[in-house]
Each structure stands twice: as C-alpha cells, then as structure tokens.
Amino acid sequence: MADLAVRIGSLRLTNPILAASGCFGYGVEYADSLDLATLGGVVVKGLFLREREGHPPPRIVETPAGMLNAIGLQGIGVHRFVAEKLPELRRLGATVFVNICGSTLDEYCEVARVLSDAAGVAALELNISCPNIKEGGIQFGCSLTGTYEVVSAVRKVTSLPIIPKLTPNVTDVASFARAAEDAGADAVSLVNTFLAMAIDVETRMPKLSNVMGGLSGPAIRPIAVRMVWECRQAVKLPILGMGGICSVSDALEFIIAGATAVQVGTANFVKPFIWSELIDGLGSYLDRHGYPSVTDLIGQLQLPAREHA
Amino acid sequence: MAVDVFAPVLANTRLSPDYNVLALAAPQIAALARPGQFVMLKTSSGLDPLLRRPFSVFEHLRDADGALQGISILNKRVGVGTAQLYEARPGDRISVLGPLGRPFVPVHPPAAAWMVAGGVGLAPFATLAESLADRATPMTLFYGGRSASDLYYESFFARLGAELVLTTEDGTRGESGRVTQPLERALSTCPAGQPLAIYACGPTPMMRAVAALGERYEREVFVSLEPTMGCGMGGCYSCVVRVRSGTGSHFVRSCLDGPVFDATTVVWDALQAGH
Image 1 (cartoon, rainbow over the protein chains, first blue to last red):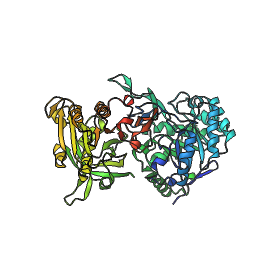
Image 2 (cartoon, chains in turn red, purple; image 1 turned 180 degrees about the vertical axis):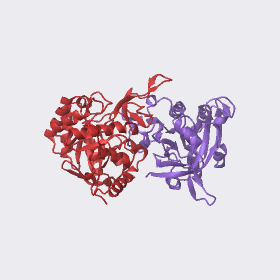
Image 3 (cartoon, rainbow over the protein chains, first blue to last red; image 1 turned 90 degrees about the vertical axis):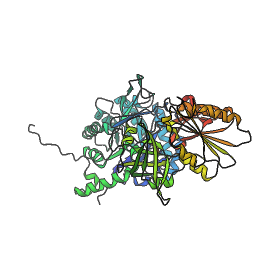
C-alpha cells in the first residue's frame, strides 16, 4: 500500500484528505458517525474573537451541480471554541486546523495568539476570502498588500503553520499566492467560493437573504483545478486544493495539478461517509500506477507536446 | 447515530396526483428511528438537485412475522426532488441517511396527546401515534387539508385508537374551515385538571396558530419545523431557527436542536416564510 502521508510545513498529515471549513461544523458534530482521526485533518468553521450570529435564513439555495451559501460566519468565538470544542477534538485524535477570521489585523493576531496558547491546534487557516460578510477578511484577500499584511502580522505572533485561504474572486490568484509566500505563509489553500447570485423570478427577489452568496460544489471544480495549477507554477509553498471534490478522481485532479492535500466541503453534505472512499481510493490509484507515495504524484501533470516552441 | 443506507424502493403507493408513500428497505434506520426524527434522502444519483432532502420517518414497516423491514416516507410533489420521489419505481435505490434530529417525547397517561396535522404535516405522527398507543395514552388527531384529496391514512390512526377530527378548507370532508377551529373548541372545553400535550406539524402559519392557542390555554405545544436543510448533520448551519434565550434570542440548527421544538421558544416572526 502506497504511503499517503504528506507534509504541510512542519506538520505531517497521515493522508491528504481534509474536511473543509464551514462544511464540517466544529468537527465534533460528526464524532458519533466517523473516526475523526482517520482524516488527514479537520478544518473547523471560521472563528472570530467573539460570537457571531450570522445571516438570517434563507442561507442556502441550490443551483445546477452546486449551491450558494450566505451563512455569514455564525460562530461561537475563539474562547468558547477553545473551552468547549477543542478538548473533545483532541480526545478524538483529530488533526485540528482552525480557520480564523478578523475584522482588523489586531483581531486576526489576537485569535491566532489564543489558539497558539491552546493545546491541540495543528495549524491556522487564515480566512481572507469569505465572500459573505463585509468586514471579515475579504478586504484583505482581494488586495495584494492586504494579503501580505495579514499574513505578516499573524506570522509574528504564532509559530503554528499558517495557511491563508485564497479567494477566486480576483483577476490573478497566483499573485495572491506569491504575496502569501513572500509574507511567510507555510502553505496556501484555494479556492474559497465564487461570489454568485440566484433570483426567484416569481417574486423577483434574491433567493438568499444576503442577496449574494458563495457558489460551491462540482460546478466550480474545473475553475478551481485551473487556479491550483496556476498557483503551483507561481509558488513553492504546499497548496491545499479544493472546490467541488466529490470523488477520488476529483481529488486526484487537484493533486496532479499541484495540490499537496485537498479539502472536501459540499460533498460532505451529500455523503457524510465519503472519507474512507476517498482515502482508500487514493491508495488504490497510487498502487495501480506504481507510485510509492502520494508525494510522488503531486504536480505530475503531463503536458501535451507542442508543435511550436 | 446516523447511518447511510443505499435502500431499494420496496413500493411506491400513489395516493393522488401529488402525494405518494415510498417504502424503503432500510431496517437499520427503522430500528433506530424514534417518533419525530427525520431522514435525508438523495432523490437522484445525479447532481441536480445536488443536496439531500429532509423527510419525517412516516411508518415503521414490518414483514408478516413482525420483523422490521424498513421505513416509509410521505411525499408531496412540490419541486424537482419531490417529483423524482413521486416517480420512483420499486427496485430503484435511494440513499437514506438517518435517523436524525430530536424526537417527540410521547406523554404517558393520565396525560392525553393531541396531534395537529396540516396536509403533508401528517408525516411525523404515524410513529408518534404508535408510541402513544404502546403507552395507552389517549390521543386525538386533528387533521386538516385544503380538500378531501389532501387527507390520508385516517384508518391507520383509527386502528391505533386515535379519535379523529377532520377539517377541509373547501368543506369536502369533515368540518369546513381550518384545523385550528375544532382545536380551539376542544381546548376551551378541556378540564383544567386534564394534563395534555399538543404536537403540531404543518404549514408555518398553522403551527404558529397552534402555538398561540397553546399559550392562550396554557398548554404545552411541541412543533416539528422543517426549514431548508443542507446536510442534516450540523455541518452547514443553513437550517437555523431563531429561539428565545434569556432576554434575547439566537439561531440554533434545527437538524440538531430540532426539528421538534417547544413552541414557546420559537421566535415565530423570524421563521422563514413559506415553510
């Protein structure tokens, strides 16, 4: 059986299959149904310093092969997370990635400090890409200097691996990966959702209370694969790829395009027991193609020969 | 604990051009399911619709020897997913995830149980009525629909000993008007010393009206809500309902903290229209 272990900076993961933030609650919701320790990691729902109520419903709407969400980062805040959820996640043996949010640089840093002082956090994913709230991160994630500043600031206050999560709602995502690398990030994750909208033509009202939301699911996968491929060529950092992964072959596309690990979000809503299928299927693929380790497959895209130079 | 069963369709009984009962071979879920719990069904193997749909567990199905065979769901065709379930054929396989959510708590005698159902809101009451019958709790089913063609399974409830009170808005069956009319009359004549629990499921305006009657007559009301759900497991935070807490209120996930709620905790003004 091929070796599925990968490294994200100083962190070793037993396999490259992670549950994506915002799609897996705080992880503990799934503890009755799954052994969380079998996942490469669990990226818990985005946390601010304080509790947040989120947007009024309707918060989701389905679209062909996808869904829009505007949850608005409802959350319990970092202190309650550390007190109420983290000990349980530790006991369950989960590799805990915490997605952190902030309205200001100071807030990102404070959340990062609290989590660095708590036992049981493996890495911090910086949410600079939520499309659904005005003050939470996207103003950092849509500006190269903002991305550089937030990564640099958090870098100064934590020794945990930091992984900015990039938005696809920019012209050139690779330049944002470079800004993150220059600022001292350990990896980047991409993509967050695509800003989108759906309208009820009978009432002529938006289908989401927040008017706009983020599109996820298989509909976005080919764009996300392309963006991972672009970033792979722009930076040396490990990439955590995501966007509509529903099967082993979907996950393999991201790894071949250059992702060291992948995150699965929307598919978990449909198939909460997808994890063993993905992990076992990845091992089978590597064995079948003679790769001793998944790390040998990362970025192994075979480009067609060109007739002209 | 929830399980995901790729269940063969045992039978599809069409009750009308809109309603059907789908029997699913999921004995594992039947063994675990308690009254008021729900399952998430993947109505097609394709990507449209992408997400599962929540349904109350309607009946526990048993074979001739009494062994659990599976569950049924009561479906009303309203959109793409429910249309796929209306068209399902025996032998088709449907992914069934469950059981999920907080169940009803059936009361014991001397308390009486009144169930108030509007249309397809009958669904969670078949298993509740069985539980109540097991406890020998006296029960009444107040069951309303738009028309006679919206009312089904009365004999199922009668067999379990439930007293039936039927209403239709067009007067084609039972009393003409809304189900809350006979409910209010019954409340006004029920002796104060008679302990009573009211369980309601149906359109939001109906449940809200039942909740208001419960407050007026100081009776406990439990409602089974069904907001739009993404996952049913607590992962997505889309199915939130605003509930009172202390002097304020906050959103809770109806898949974990519901679908059954004490009606006095629900902030009815905040409930999504159309459910």
